[in-house]
Length: 458
Image (tube, rainbow, N blue to C red; front, side):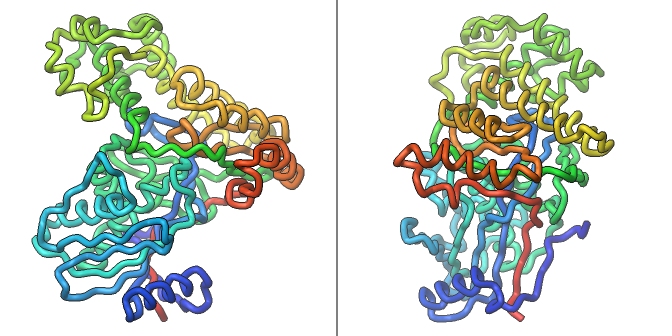
């Protein structure tokens, strides 16, 4: 795999989407773009809510993506426009500090996260002036990483515009860190697959150090994405960060239970590494050391020997300060169990047993049950959709992405794909007038796509 994002010479007129974006750009700014940048969305096949705990995940890039057209100028400003008229324009100075409003997660703040990440990484006092038009085909708030793809696209644009060079790994790490400016404490999966993806293969993404390994998906089945049509914006609600906080507290409680230095531990993987334990042994430790009833702030403070002020400043995030009770047992059980399922999924893909499709489907079903029951990140519509997918011919279906809405991913045998799409469409989309007619953009087969790239007109 090449170390740096590719720069591809492209005949723009041969690509309808690029040509339409070029037309929009010229109408807006009265000049042609100098270059284009693209960053794909992703579907996570298995490994939900464990990247920020330090564990490996198994996503693949999808065809829907964020695309930006860019020209450079000496205006001292970055002007951002969106091809979708529902999204407003925004202009920011190239020399001033870039402010991100966490309480108002507009589309342009995600773009500015990527800009700010590159600016700070290189210590650039005055960024190059840019005019940009952004266009996206990833449904927003759907669990397919539209936000992270926007951050990644912006990071790539800013790097190219300022004549800097970074590897895919470095870009992924910078964009993962800079997306936290918007307030979401993610773990880096979305940015990593956006840069490190390769067409035709899923990837096992490992952290510390960040690396990606090809995972050949079995013949005889495809992955189908279906949107439950409930939107969930991670940055606009506390659901996601509450789970991050619960895992952080569980880490410290487990470390304390085994006499480890809990003060320096923030991720569940660190406890396992320190104890040199297997994932099965960690699950046993969770059952032994953590009770299933929710923990109060007082109980946690007493167990860890910290003050209420330390609890608020060291363990909680800005948008979780109001939380009073925490389900540590359930969250830790999900993380260690899901981490084991990821490794089992890859092992099945690598060994290619005769029953591989069914075995992978079983792991996906177990994953959804854990997300629903232990991590409580599903919703009634997602559970209904997953149930319909299984009845319609899927061997395995699960929520994908953060949850609380968004998409499910299903593994469907080749010979059942056509009947599956028809059955899901009729059972989930047609009966509800709010969803009727939405299946064209909400239900589709996905194959592993390529990673982020720069396009230059040939």
